[in-house]
Image (cartoon, rainbow, N blue to C red):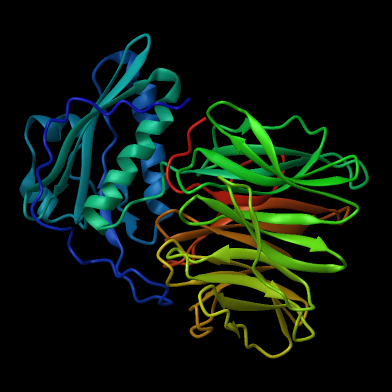
Length: 440
């Protein structure tokens, strides 16, 4: 189990809410990135020098992938950490491009690693935060992610996603002998752990709202099952099973009390809701068409799903109270799939297939303001970061030479549109971002 020990708070010294330098929203460029200087941590003993370099590198990488920040070139820093901690050169920092400053030190013993860090606005000399944080040494990367999240919160005014994790399907083997294992990793692709042994096919994993449980579809000996797995204990149970038919795409309701999923019964595929306490099943859609990929809005009132009721694959939104259904995908000659609500309910992410091209995009819940964030040979399965600032998705790419197809997980920042690949050790698909820090 990952355990974070954030102890001995030196002080939370800041004034008011973070400055409004960063506009939150998918605006296609209407944003202001905050120039941030991340000084290499001072190593309090010789044995901590490598950790000082590694922690600093991770923090810089984290912030550089966020549309909220622009990491200032270290060559422009008027001081290094040791000199700053002894005597800050405020005049030099006022003349630097940095509007945010991160400085601190690291110490390591046989079992723990500890970082003391300080966050400043150098032009006003205002200290926004000062903390000491400690973790077991084998979890040292978690410190870099924790501090990155604090930087994001204090200067951009919103929680970061750097301490979160991503579920995915690790894929190995040939096309005819494919092995798919359920796996979990930190949001930057490191610290991969496998949650299944590959004997059964697993797809569409999803986190519970508190990050303590997951649900997914498992296919074993012709039987398709929806599984609930407890990450802390490793125990799992079958929620729904289907022999000779299909049950798939499970996803938790926002309150964590139930799941929505697709179930094919009597030749028709509909959306169902299951109460996890009573195991009672409720049919949500009743049209004589195929309804799949349900996602419930954060307030629980609406369900987005895909359906072929209009003759092609499109996205619809169902009002659970009135039963009213509205199609929200409107592009001509386009098919839409895999709708997913953003954490605050302002956007719905989707996969679009138009004129043979796959895209990942977002739209408002009423279908307006459609924006494409990523394209490719095949891109699919978008999933939101817990703060709603980024999307992870699966991308298939044709390889040069043999023409084979490889599947990897990418992420895109919705403000800067910057993309990056998560460095998994095998092919990877079906990503699902955790709500915050998942524990196992």
